[in-house]
Length: 274
Image 1: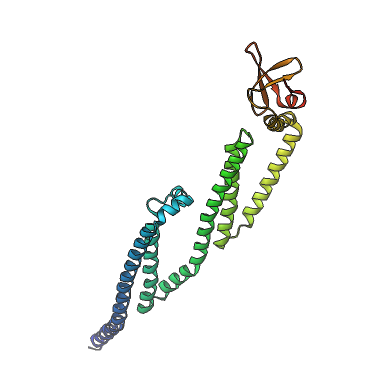
Image 2: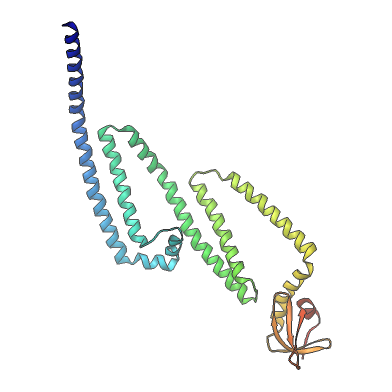
């Protein structure tokens, strides 16, 4: 009998504890659900207001002109950026109210995790803004470099523009990573070593192996400035019309129809107008 009584008392105590816990949890659970319901309504209202406002202000057209929509598509973002932004605000509000619900129920771990997320959110926004603005600057710098090089007669204008754009994007990416609080010391060290090695290699190349090519490249720039295609020129016993100027050669079309290719340096030093 004593054993039966002990088991009964233990079960009664366990059941009583469960009832007490449920009675304590139920009001908090209802409060949490109410907070979530209010949060869902508020998030829906904000999303609809933002969608309408962006549509009336034609934000998508502005983003398209700034080139931000193109950048977003390269990152895999499809559809309207304004609508995606409104949806993002919706989910941020849901998460914010979820924290309130977690506090009401007593889920401190969930609440702390959401608080840490919102504490880190400004860094993420700053990094995103740096990437967006940096992409605009990179495209502008690349386009300006390409157009300037093309106007100067440089044959490798598109490649030069892409190189400038890539360089700006690389710097912007490092800045964005820094905004996220990630240590970039190792990246900077590797980049410095790589740039130093590339500079040394280019110096040796230009100084030893390709001196003549380098001279002709620079000479070609000035030949294009001094002479125009179709203009009669003469260099020693070679005379004719200037047919074109490549990276390293000047093409002269003679009277008999043959075309002579001369190094740009020689043309710069000795060619005269007829």
